[in-house]
Picture 1 (cartoon, rainbow, N blue to C red):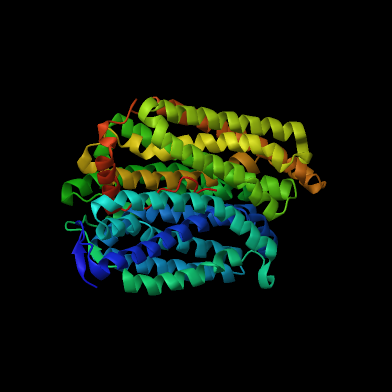
Picture 2: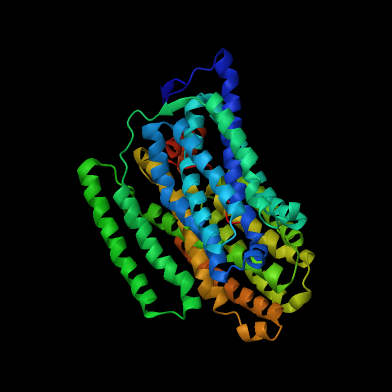
Length: 513
């Protein structure tokens, strides 16, 4: 394969046909990553029952993936810029496929967590290359159509992931219980590797930034020092070393900031461009991304445990219950970008936060009012309201956050936004120990009243989600009232191109489903 710089490619003859086959491969990879994120939650109770996983292990099955994915996103994008997007994409896809197989055959909870971390790390190699490959493969006038197709893939992944996970778990194919949710990636990944080698052309960035492995190690170490004792503390009785470890994470984060400043002076290739935080709206937007990710991390895990363990529903019934939410997200996301944001600006995002808060509080009321006899139909209204709220937020949020960032830094800003969103999700999953499991009345569970205990803990955790959504709403007042005229198609395309070179994959508005 020939190597091309990131410029508008020619579209003649065979190359014109091959680029659509290349697009199919990278879109399949994006879909595979999206479904893998959404498919796991619905199978959590089955995993717990089959391999005897503790509740903290269940947290790490999702949290380990999110943390490894977040930690490697920016570095993965830079590896593609330096060594070739096609090469790193195929490496990531191969590793993701191998990790999926290891997840599917794992018979030990710790091995499953390790395989999930490997999945997240290899996804961080694969996903950032997708938009960069699109930018290097398609001419400017066709990218709008391509990005629209990605939006459809995101919506399809959000809806199909939970349902596919429910069906594969419910069917118990070949007596494998939950394992097909991971093994389904094998034929898809192998086909993607074969087709990717054939149809994807190689490309590199003309002037790629250098790697910042020290910064990555410090950032990951600080987050682990915070999240490990937070996740394990309840089961270990909140030991002293856990509190010391969480306090020590502050020192590590301070060292990370100092190193990033040094790296900026040394070669201008820091992992995080700290000067971005001088832009007030961007700093507030990062806070919104983290807080919003925390809400998603908390809600989707405790929601699954509430339905399947507390209410005793089957995976299929629980998966189908989420359809109104996914539809609400998809419909509202399209309307918000095309119709509402150009007219009302940040008020649309604020309305989304208020709608989510209203939906969560309505869900809390219904859970208490109907008790253990609550039905999926009764859950539909709060889920639709929550979905609409999320859709109003996720689609325009990135463009709003980077609206006042200098254009030359838009790529770094976009990559950082995607990373912090995933990081917030990991933090939310860690907080489940505090907001849900600490509130779980183990005495009631022991007396055979687990349904009531899980319902009460669910409502407790949902009130925490309301509080964090209040923080999201408050931070939104610091965002720009309107995105500038740069949100026109040409500038939006430039932003997407910069995001690609910075290592931002397709946006995943319902990645925590």
